[in-house]
Length: 180
Image (cartoon, rainbow, N blue to C red; front, side, top):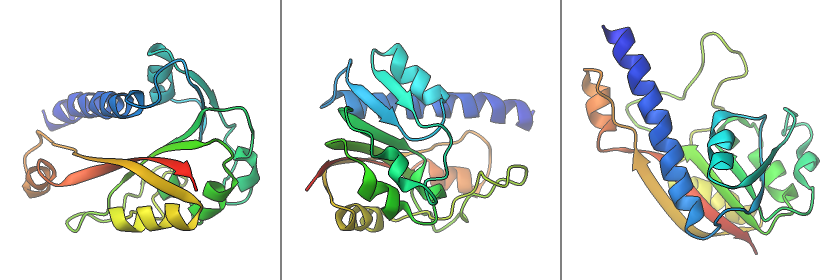
């Protein structure tokens, strides 16, 4: 029963995150904006395409080793949704972005939960889980000015103390930033 609940819940939470991200972006960057999405093609990018955005992805490069790969001109914005926490040095890639706008989201550091680490995928790990002020500072030091912010929770229907805490503790932090 718990596995079934977790599968349904995961799908619901993913769609919730996609909807919140679209609502946040579309307030100031409506479709059909041309977007460079950091990372390989993914379901969130497909969702944004279905809403009218023109999305291109990077090709799976290691941004720690090749941050210059994102320096391509001609985009209205760059998106980095749930990407920067996987990097050892997110400042490198942030400094190389040439688009005038950045939309990014990260999972926030939670006092009741350790940093995420997949037990099956050695690349699916969080090197950083930031507090909001730390992420803002990283962006500022990288040449960006945060102009809008939004946080949201990640509620869970699975029983337990942590799921209860997740119902009122913000888990995700999204920003819109522009070059300084």
